[in-house]
Length: 339
Image (cartoon, rainbow, N blue to C red):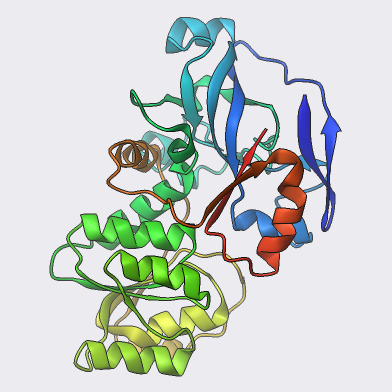
């Protein structure tokens, strides 16, 4: 099969690989779309400890079942040709986190495109328990965005957002745009957004959100003015840089909540005295449980959420240049590779 293989920092090439062997509990998926995730860009640069060459990236996918293992066929009902997506976060299913519906915290979790071969290939092997049949009539392109949408569903669920709340989303990439949409579904009307890319910012404004400047002092001033000096109840950092984390803290009302979603930077200097004196809650948000993944798939199928503008569909052999273009700041919201 053809696959795009990461070989070294900033180096990927198309290779012919053997198709994956289908184990008794596995499903082989013929990939229709494989999305490039922002978390993979650090892997492409060689700065992500999870992704070691040689490796096939890709964990946002949709396609059709190509083959089903013996036990999987008996238990799942999946058959060749069925349109599907897959939850790429493979958990053990037995630990305290898995049995309480917090599969994303499983200490033995594995991820397609990191610890397992990913979907930037003609075929990808996935445990049958991770495979979800698409609702009837659902578009494969939309289904490939279930994973980032699930991140947003989980983050908003954790925040407790509801009518009457105000929210700031810093970063209008795919997860940021999904956050704004999911907040709207939870009844949050007063939504503010910042991003350095004017095209992405315009997409958020078209959703009914209010744009604010990206630089910290101007962002804080804009939010304070818009909220009568109060600040927002909820601030979601969908970037994960030192500046965006500080901005979220500074824009949040006393007693409010900051949700750290982005993973760009690890060590960050923050004004913790402000956190103490303002009784701010700072909460980490990682990936999603299975329930959020299923919710995201349903909402995408019902077109209650979705990304259309700024989505680029391109053949898999063009993938390597697109990783570099996204590093260089291309305005594309989502790039979908088609094997």
